[in-house]
Length: 475
Ligand code: HEM
Image 1 (tube, helix red, strand yellow):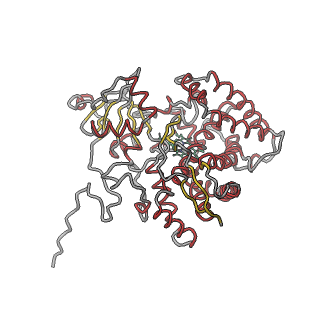
Image 2 (cartoon, rainbow, N blue to C red):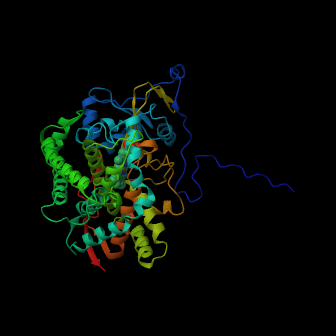
């Protein structure tokens, strides 16, 4: 007796539970110039360039959702000079950019607002062979196993911080999360655990970093940042704050170089002091400074705000919060629930909402093609809110992720390909440990049941009130 083969389901139909689906296929990637000429260029957002720049920077969410509603999943924006990027939100387009050879689609982070601060040659801002060299040097301490060793240190930082929070009085979580992530960065990157003794270069450095991070939120600093756009060296307030920080960073580097036992130390500074390039060269002090500062700036606010957003969502979704609490406090399926909550938090509120590449040849994006030299941005926010991928995309539903791994080109809060976030494993470890400790020890409520708006600071998207909460009870 023969058994009839089961007909295959159409690819774009959501699987059984209707929680995560698939997008219809859309061809994308490099094309020969003659093949590109038959395809139209993407439709352009119909507003004056200067207005688009302002709207995009201040209200990116409204801007991109409206453009997608009116123009479809690929559209072009206008800048002041030069033209703004083409924005897409299809997973096949993402795949084509993440899997392209580095020379076909170099990253746009070389043009990031962090460039005048960390210089043009750090792992974040460099492109081409220089980027690959820096990335190779920095990868080992960020591997999963290396990061596992940090779990205890992260737990210590989280428990100490939680002990200090008031009960019954509202406060903003984001700065508290930043205190934890700063401790983690200082320990992981510089090997500085807890509060170093007064008068030491380590203490002076920690103070300078805290100062720089605090100052960077002032309106004056935002202005200063605009003045710095496109430069290789900073000016104004940024320069003043940085010169203090640089002096202190060099002092810590000098001290560490002269200390015995660097070979046994596991922090990133000590690893970099020993690291050789393939040509056998050691890193210069300036290179060390650029990489260390890159890690501090890339790793601290992002992780803190990602946690703050997850809590902002969780305390407004009582059923999900209840499930997490039950799992963590009973110890049954706690790891699965924690992972699902973090994954859904990063899906619905990606702290970095958009990333980009510049295509060096004609590129197909579904029905359209764009010419060589076009900046192509992937809107993480739009991709994470596709109805076909994530039914009820605006609902916070951690249960989407139980027994399912997020797709490489569909869930991209850490970007992808050879530019994927170097600190992703560390950021996930921090989020797991902190979420677990807070869930186990505290009962939290939102100060105001209305959701917090997203505001944009530099390249990040953060909760407008810093995720304000009240601790109702603690254990
Ligand atoms: C939740 C926290 C974090 C988020 C959401 C995040 C997100 C991102 C994104 C979107 C990119 C760009 C990827 C691309 O263009 O494809 C990136 C790059 C990067 N991130 Fe993170 N990040 C986080 C935490 C960290 C941490 C903890 C560190 C290090 C301590 C770090 C270090 C870096 C570096 C060095 C790069 C540049 C990688 C390269 O260009 O090769 N990040 N991150």
